Length: 426
Image (cartoon, rainbow, N blue to C red; front, side, top):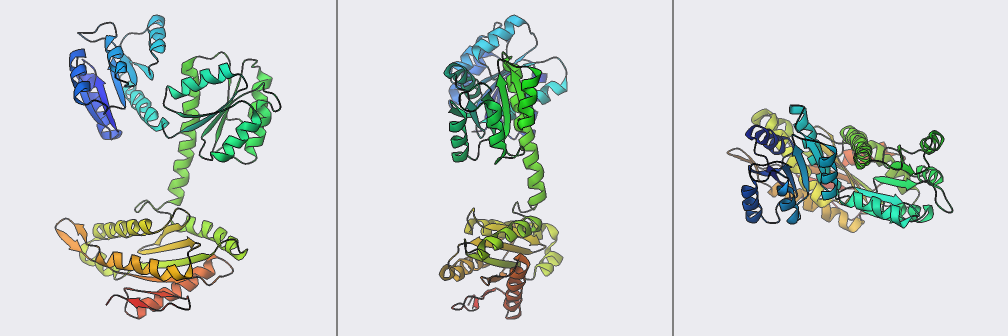
């Protein structure tokens, strides 16, 4: 559900927000200029809005009544207003709006609004662990998080927090109090950092007895941030968002370094790095490993005849077929040019020929459309289970088998499993 309701009587602001939402965030949107139009759209699209951006003052609702209307239908609200005061702030916090944004400031205000919309949408994928021995404080913080659609786990002490973190490795942020029985917050931070790097999990320390020394102790133990109680809700969300955005930024950098930008699968660098770890694991007898090389037949001629855009489309289609045939534990990469490499974990010898033959046939039968044109391509495959000293040895074996497949006519597979032989499409 990626549809937003925009309620704004200023056509200029409505148009600016609408363009931002549609073309930069890629969300569908509906626009209303009055409370009456808002009620009509909500009735027409009941249950379709994940968020509403609402002007606080409308011609037919000058005292924020439209916020109550939208919230009464279970739609979270970001308030967009040209007026602001302590009274308005308290009113908005009492209504538990997602955020409030002042119109003053020009185009950058719309940028901030877009960031707030995107952050709220992403929150449903973020898991946060709250650690506090006070049930009252823990409940209050969890309510703040849940009101922004975060997924939340709770622990009353450090031991339970470590257990939950182990069971939920996707946890993004740990928020921990300092004073707790058995293990204080700084000790918990130290324990977490033994297994969870700062680039993967952010930790925010919290205490009502905050001093410079306590803040320093948390940060030196490995915390990402520290908050002293009492704090403003706005400060809490701002600090939290900054830490999550930093994790996302690091993840984006790592992905750009490890993923092929065209096909979306891993690149050569990542395959060699992780493939070596799999070989070492296989040599210890922990897993069974199959390494395969896949090459698109006559790819240079295809590029020359139909152009590089067509070649790119073929690469994407082949990558999609490969992804559908392997599991999360396997490593699939674009190794360079028209070549792909696969490291398949615990693939039985009996199923190896079946899996790769299925892939070969799926590619051969696939009709790839490019404009008015329809193309058919084939692939050749070499796969080895012969254990080498390192990943390069196994790639060399797979490459030699691939060359045999090509020399024997292409559109076939060669394996070094005893019971298998070259298989070609009749």
